[in-house]
Amino acid sequence: MGRSSKDKRDVYYRLAKEEGWRARSAFKLLQIDEEFKIFQNVKKVVDLCAAPGSWSQVLSQKLRSDGDDSEAKIVAVDLQAMAPITGVIQLQGDITKVSTAEDIISHFEGDHADLVVCDGAPDVTGLHDIDEYIQAQLLLAALNITTHVLKKGGTFVAKIFRGKDVSLLYSQLRIFFPSVTIAKPRSSRNSSIEAFVVCEKYSPPDGYVPNMCNPLLDQHYDVDFNSLDGPNRVIVPFLACGDLSAYDSDRTYPLQLPEREAYEYHAPSQSPITPPYQIACQLRKQNQLQNPTQPSPAVKHEVDEVEGAMAQLHL
Ligand SMILES: C[S@@+](CC[C@H](N)C(=O)[O-])C[C@H]1O[C@@H](n2cnc3c(N)ncnc32)[C@H](O)[C@@H]1O
Image 1 (cartoon, protein in one colour):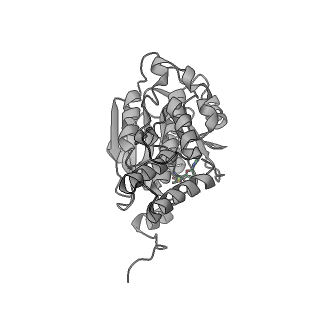
Image 2: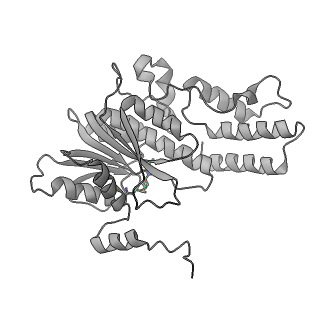
Image 3: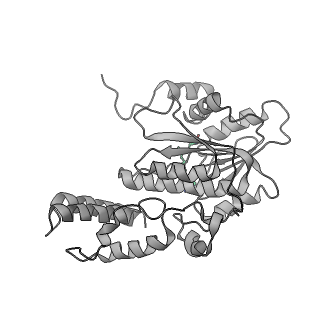
């Protein structure tokens, strides 16, 4: 009999139950450590998107196992509340919000973390472009926080969805880390597009001053982005990608208002990821080439689906 979609009881699920981990994800972090030795000489860690807490459990065990835990500091953050874990400072909040980022940073005042980990994943909508976009935003939010708290030479490990814009994210990470490696621990299901970036030897560009002005899901971030200059604009140094010819003057039907607003909104802030509105625009453009008079029902349906999902997500 085949396994139903409800049957998640693979070997790691069972092992997690046996060994007392709150989630099978614990094995992903343990296996990343087997390969990259990310816990070597580590005492201070930020665990982003930490609930239900299996990574925090691993961190607590690894950092406090030698009995000398006076220096150990683990700050864990998630949207969801988490049951307490010995030695872990827990914060509840959205990592794309400035206030949460500030809360985390305040716990490291005058001090730095050796390691930042982020296992953040959105509630998947099933629309791959949207899921990848939101996951990328979580990763960029985590990177922003990391630039405030990570010591030079430190390590950043984060979940990444290997979607079509992923090479742009790798390039952005390489601006801050000379070594960026993609890990796919054996406990991460082969069927999943999830992987992990292991970014080593943190070294921001000369003159880089961490800031909270880069455009993320929290629209407040980009208010001052255009006032940033030089190395401080490096998180998002790319022109908007996607097929901008949708905005050419030779178009055969007028742009819809949301498309125009999206273009005007995204162009100045140079969004790192193809924004969902642009995805919708590209679909329209493709359809326009195939059929200059009106959208085919299939394309119209796809565009409506993207826009419907975005409306639900208040994007
Ligand atoms: C795969 S789970 C993390 C599992 C965790 N590493 C563990 O080992 O138990 C992904 C988590 O990301 C969190 N998350 C998603 N978006 C977030 C956001 N914007 N801010 C904070 N946490 C977020 C979710 O609440 C969820 O708990």
